[in-house]
Image 1: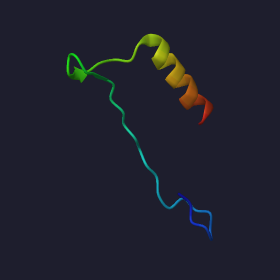
Image 2 (image 1 turned 180 degrees about the vertical axis):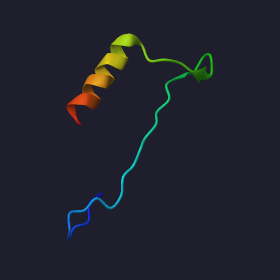
Image 3 (image 1 turned 90 degrees about the horizontal axis):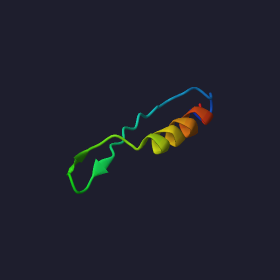
Image 4 (image 1 turned 120 degrees about the vertical axis):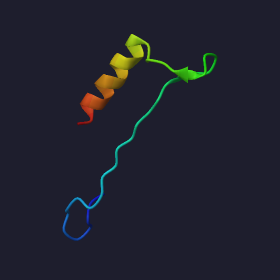
Length: 46
């Protein structure tokens, strides 16, 4: 978020996501191909 008058950064956010296996009912790693796609998307936006 930026200040409309000065353009200075006035707020930031950090998001954390967890992939949950609904059968095992615990957090699990993303499949390698999905992780690669997510990484590429994040890199393209930075």
